[in-house]
Length: 542
Image 1 (tube, rainbow, N blue to C red):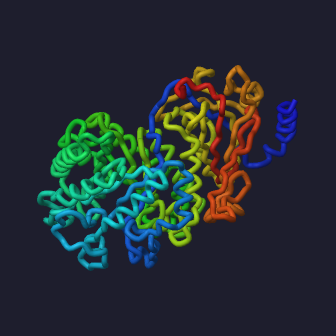
Image 2 (image 1 turned 60 degrees about the vertical axis):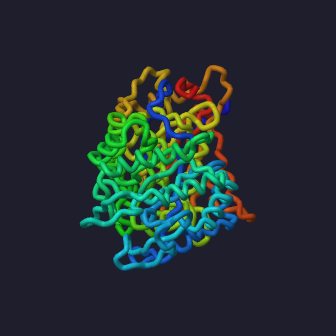
Image 3 (image 1 turned 120 degrees about the vertical axis):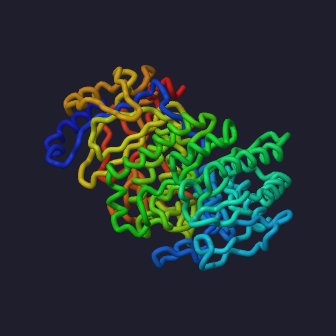
């Protein structure tokens, strides 16, 4: 009776709807097989080394968020991390290869970072005191963080010409640091070697054959030091921009079972000062360009290092600290969630956002620690999207982006839909490719266009989404929109409710609305939605 009334009202409103700018279509999800698998802790965020006087475009946006000085006692920081239940954090960044660890037989003076005209990135070498390392690990343990730590890959090396560095890597400081961490019982999920030294590098680079030999050496150190331990950390590298020839050489030289994860960085929106950042974020053609990087890296790994997996070790959208009034606002979630969807589709196991806090692209505000809109996007993905990726096809508007995963921690399927159009509402139904015998390609998805009357007919029939048990008659929807319709607001709205900290400083509840599973899905212009189908029949999710 309830569905019949909804359908009558919907049909009665067709004349009004047709007078508006509305696009109709169908999304087909193939639940028969998985097209890719992510890690259980796919969502990751970084903490950088930049001091407060790191500035870009005459703005100093880092404040006191450096690994060395971040306020670990701030209650919002603790609550924001704990909300993930278990968040992966990567400590690393541009100054990583200038960090000395004040432990053991350190051969150089250990001083704080300071501005230096001819220093790498304009800074001197810096120092991580073991007291601070203790504080960090106690904090990470209390907040259930899964830690990836980036090691200095330039220690002992010297500059040759241009940005090329040569000489032998001196592993002594890293080895003493790892020994200290083991002696204190610190749980490090993975050690990453170097930052942006691949290809022509950023500021500095090292030849791939030398880098590969270093990895063999570091892997031996890790195996020896963790001998007898219940857990051996992963080895991750190179944490740089993808260069196919360089990455191929690295895998060939390092050889089988040395490198556990091959990490790369992505800043596909360009400079943070670019006045066209918003238009790039909302342009599906621009967003599509980065797919070639994911595809080529996946092929490189499959061909030359199938024992390894692909990680995005750092991605902030726009480089040089992100775009002010863009990277920290609602509009950035169109780029961010699309990147998470695309990366997972192309066999990326882990995706680290630059940053958790610091710069303009932090998930948390650098001074107040209050969550920016992308924080809630990350949290919803982490809670709803499982590690099994499914193929999706659509005949809807090209401004509609769609990704599907098995739901996390429960049966069913979760669909992410992103409407990049600024004026078109998209009304769609969701079909189960298994029941409709529709074959989906994983890279090129083509589905014949169906008329609106066909969509109505199949929507009325239930579209075979739910199981025959009729256990669930609803789906769960999380609609994300900007406050007051302003794309560059710092307040995200979930199902009409602004997402703001509670009066006690807690992360707000992220509750869905329940909708009749047989009704069409409506995606407003410039909005994002997670749609959970509790009883979507998907053999790949069992």
